[in-house]
Amino acid sequence: MSTVTRLLTNKHVVIAMLVAPVLAIIAYFSVDASVSEPPQAAQSGQSYPLAVRSNCRYTSGFCQLENGDIKLKLESDGVQNDRLTLRLASALPLEGARISMAHTGTEPQPQSMQATDETGTAWQVSLPAPTDAQAQIRLAVSVDGSYYFAEAPTTFIEHKTFYSEHQKTQDAS
Image (cartoon, rainbow, N blue to C red; front, side, top):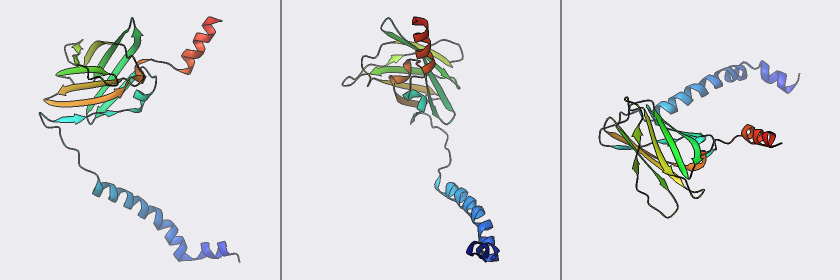
């Protein structure tokens, strides 16, 4: 009789193999419940950071920012005539939005974004085109008396994919 066969016929080992995954799952959720903070409602007059999603770091054409129920999407059609037009879409109505383009070594003045609908969920602004790769977009919005802010790279302002590059080479030939 081999060692593996003897091991698998031992009732203590078999019970341990069945109970261990269950205990691991219980421990996972117990640690999560004891360590994680309960979500708290935003307080009027306080500032909260927005999480910059991963699509902001790539040439995706848009950048998603979020914090709890606040979900924002910055969209760009690229740079035209040395101007960058950005559209901001929000899941909740915004009271106001200000944005600026920060270059290395400069502290720019933020510009107010203009609401493009009556509900306050769509906003637009035209900014000077970024002059270097390290330029950052700084955004601040107001929702129900609370302020949310984010700083995102300008990489996303161009929508460039492998398909679009391949299509350009096909059109040129």
